[in-house]
Length: 323
Image (cartoon, rainbow, N blue to C red; front, side, top):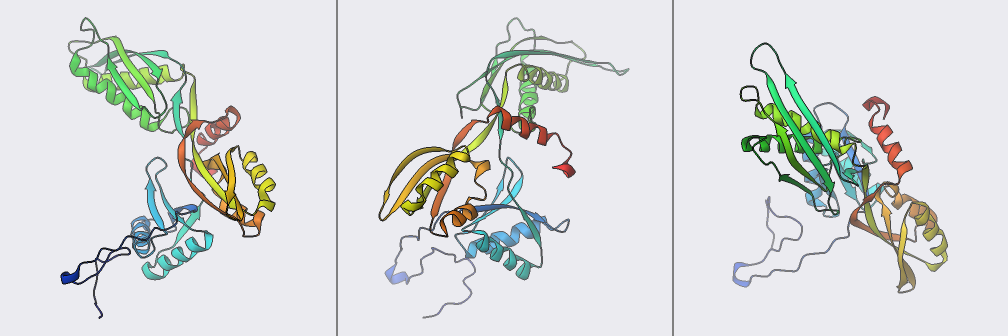
């Protein structure tokens, strides 16, 4: 039997007769090993590139397309460099658009290591109605992955309750933009405990600006640090290469967490910073003559060592054309 024009049928769908319904278990595909950021060569082709890649990925479940919300990059991930090159060639041929590939940016985050207080009195006169808002904040670190919490500790009506959402909004906007190196700020509590207002000149905008500036003041006093994504990696290799692989992982700031037999081979488990292993597929193939394989997935965030953190911060302050 043949069926035509199956526009909405995709890989892992099951086709069967109504009188004898069958639902086959889905195929489990390998996870992608290599990722690149995709940039359109011609201005205005961004949407065409994205649409074309998603269309190609529908036909190839081992290809993954996503937009990284932290770095704002379109990311293509596949089983290897050749796999991705073929996918990009198909997009060029079918949709007549070209793109450049680059190593993805690392999705760093910012946080604090100690409590600190910040203050801002925002006061502006421009001839007519002025702007006035004064905010005192205390910020303190939270456990990793606990997120942001805003706490109202105002007593005595020093700031009317209707202005508190504006203060929180100012903090949240600063969190998104980052302060140390332009990366999102995470895992802290902000307590608004005092301030002042003006019966005529105070406004939500004035308190939003005051809240943002008071937060920035406190943040820079609270031992700010960068966090980096740490990946779990499992490398399967012939035992002859154990020394080379473990030495290389250690050189990449990795931590070996286990070694065990995998049939006739050896499995090395480690945790490695994402920034160190974007090109690991090519490096492993070179070290093992193509006899090594690996899998990788996200584990957690950790503080970036000071000497590397400073390089990232310095790089973030360069104009885009110099990066």
